[in-house]
Length: 314
Ligand SMILES: [Ca+2]
Ligand SMILES: [Ca+2]
Picture 1: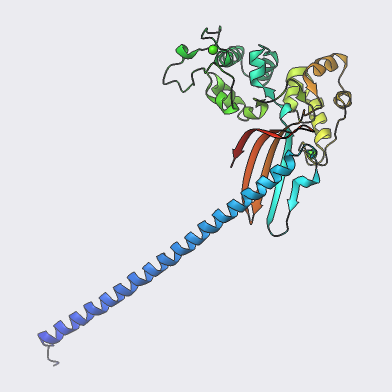
Picture 2: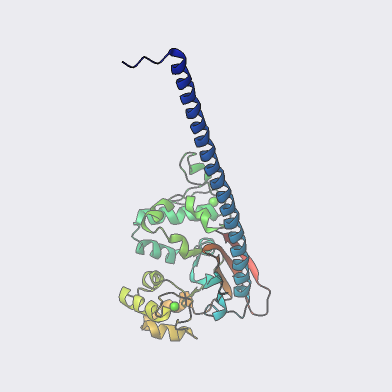
């Protein structure tokens, strides 16, 4: 029979087991710490290089913007797409700001018929349209007298989420977002902002106008409006690109629509084919898959220095 191990032997075995466990534990801790440290350094380098790429992409976007702002550079110019071949490029879109409705102008002049037609076209009911139009008017006009369906500052409850009228022009379309009633518009037409401007002139540019304008303002039926936009925008289905059909005169555009005499009369009151040198420029710089976009509105008339009217970066 094997003799039982004595107590000191057992205790030595236990303490060497504990020491081994401690060594393994220490090794594990060191390994995990090393892995974490390496990952942190990687992340730092990655962040630094993303920041460097974004910085360079912004410089490219600024260069594209400078080119597009030149009065001689038209929306379809080949200069607007520049690929430097080493994963660096800029791509610029020029649109006519005059393809939008100047919200301040129509409210100031109480010329809101086309706005009402457009809101009805987007399926808002009469009560909603009256509320929106009158609330917009009260927001802009200088007095504190409430229009029939509008709201002045004293009519806006503090927790309503609506902004109190400032009794001045909208400085930015974003200011319209919190006007009473706009929540209905947001619901039926989430991209409504694309239809408005605080800079546009009084005639909408048919070279860039949206089909809704043709349908809502001039009663051009959907098929003809869609056909006109298809012909105008060319194969890529985008306005402002090289495959567009460019209309030299308004009557060329009206012929392409197939406007009858009454439609011609109505359309001639609201449309032109001139941008008036008012460009909406979206310039995107890209470096190794990281992009940076600058969007602005610029006056770019021949013989005059370009002036920036609005600026946004993202
Ligand atoms: Ca007011
Ligand atoms: Ca096109």
